[in-house]
Image (cartoon, rainbow, N blue to C red):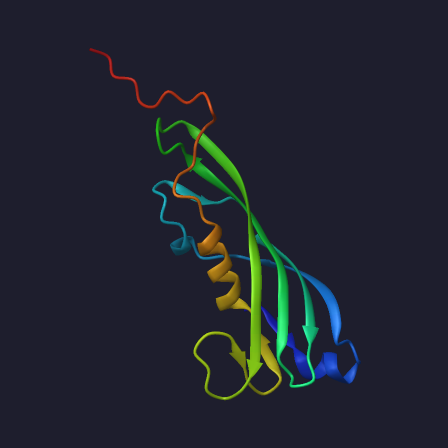
Length: 135
């Protein structure tokens, strides 16, 4: 779980800052057959805590996919960088991004950013000819 303790940051008067985290994302986020994450997802972002205790997060998620080419089934890998942009509001009833008790959980926002940046396929390269049939 990716947690940010807003109470601690407020106590330290760190209302603006940057963070870097790693996340072992679940393989269920990948809908491409025979493809997986080759390493943890890297999350890099800037945050700002506003006077109403809402928190803005802006940054990137980056990860490497590896597996089989979606066209020819040869080994393939692809670097992906996606945008992470979320506003968390301090409230008890929330549907998208919110937090309670001074603790913000980034997991849903990060998983949403991964899903939004996920390619539809992975290719072994520009010169991929697809599956060739011998006939």
